[in-house]
Image (cartoon, rainbow, N blue to C red; front, side, top):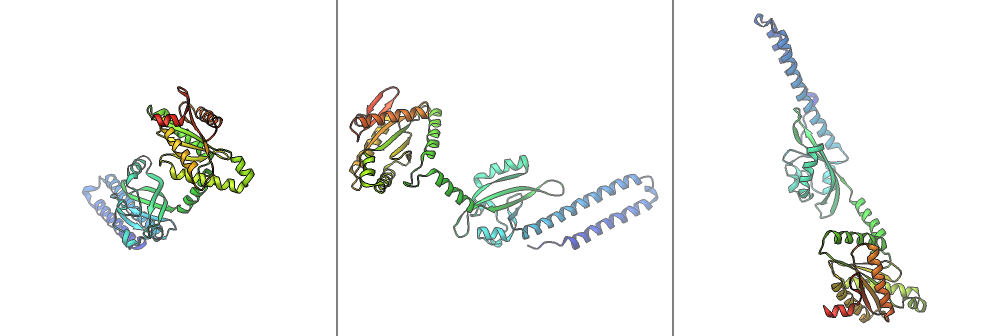
Length: 356
């Protein structure tokens, strides 16, 4: 895009305009009939000069903005009021993989590289209040690479202080977001099994309890799964074999859970299973099936005991009831599953599942 030279063409035009106005003023003041109106003419002249100054100041600002955009190390695009791209610099092209010819004259919402449509209302509301919007936008580059861009949208104005398009700056934060996700995974994942860790489980169960309290007919059940005689495996076969058992069990659980369920390792040989949208009877059916799958697994010579409860008043209450049910399962000869509720007390899950 060619940029007018404000130091030559525009200033020459400004000088000619001021000269024309000055000549007109001189002629008016020389005319006898207007001798009594010098104050009116002077005011009119001042107003004209102010308008011309603002006009050429606006041209100068646009020139400087254009120059700044082209030379900026930050990815920048200028849009008109219809969100059509009027200017874009080389940095933006290098990030998204589209050259200027593919961008110029196109509406930014119609381009495949930026997903803005669902945020347009929020952007418009923010600009109406404070003349800018800042946020993160998911993008797809020309070569199909998924990017995350930090975006700043600022309202531009013309010489009459009316809205005159937008300046949008893009900063590629994809690498930062990847590292952030990696660190989050490290802090929320058990390194041995790949399951969620206790920290992640604690947050998830609080969220589920909140949902249970909001919706009257919504149920979430909790199961505590404990490997029977795990200490013997470590003592007789070594901790390496014990770790192998934990890995194989977690893999088996993940493969046989429903999409809505989540499994976490919360202790040495103890796993917690959250079952959203599941009451105690349905949970009993789930854990009985899992218990049988584990006992029949050809590469695992283990059995498990399971205790389940339903989220109701508090996290501590649900955990305490599930632990009580697990204790009953252990005390009943192991390889068993029991449930505990405030209203029905302790029940064998096999009986609950068969009755359902």
